[in-house]
Image 1: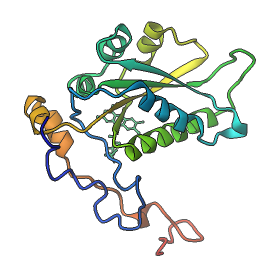
Image 2: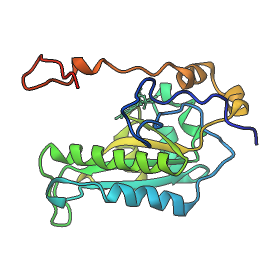
Image 3: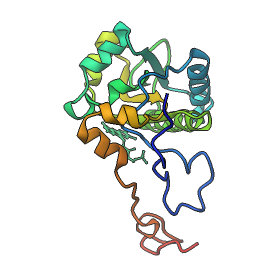
Image 4: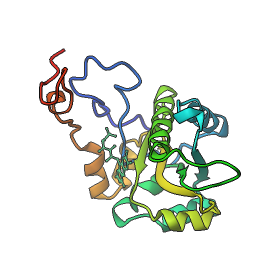
Length: 209
Ligand SMILES: Cc1cc2nc3c(=O)[nH]c(=O)nc-3n(C[C@H](O)[C@H](O)[C@H](O)COP(=O)(O)O)c2cc1C
């Protein structure tokens, strides 16, 4: 196995105020196809997701783990958007994230917070992954209804996102990847200026701290 392409993309350029593992988190588009992720590690990701806060502790999320080479994984691959067909299969694990949108087993969703809670839970999952040396790349470019049908997910749950999980691809893996995925992998990471999204005391007054 070769070393990861060096240097790794600098996760959060100029983000000197951001602590680990948030600073190092980024979404690679080329994973190491020859490095599986063991079940205990995946279990840790799911445990972190489960310990996220949620509205009234309702924990409306549900996850289905799929591993490369299994029929469940094929269900996800078959439902991918064109843009995601090249890179998602390079991840050894894809976790499908769904959330409660109807009545199920005596539970009901708390309005839009069902989506908020899933997102926050996934954020915990991604940071746990980063903390144990893995990377994640979420994707909405997938036919959620087809995935739900193929994996037997009840109608009361909406498939919202896929989460590709694995180790960052090396130069060898990059050499085998589609050009567009290599470009995506190496794309400069940028964010809107904080002053455009964070205000101090009143809308439009940039937070200057
Ligand atoms: C809900 C959600 C959906 C996303 N969908 C896709 C997708 O379909 N395909 C893709 O390549 N990336 C997707 N992404 C990844 C984002 O493009 C990525 O997080 C963003 O560009 C910021 O990059 P970073 O995660 O490395 O900071 C998605 C991310 C989120 C949170």
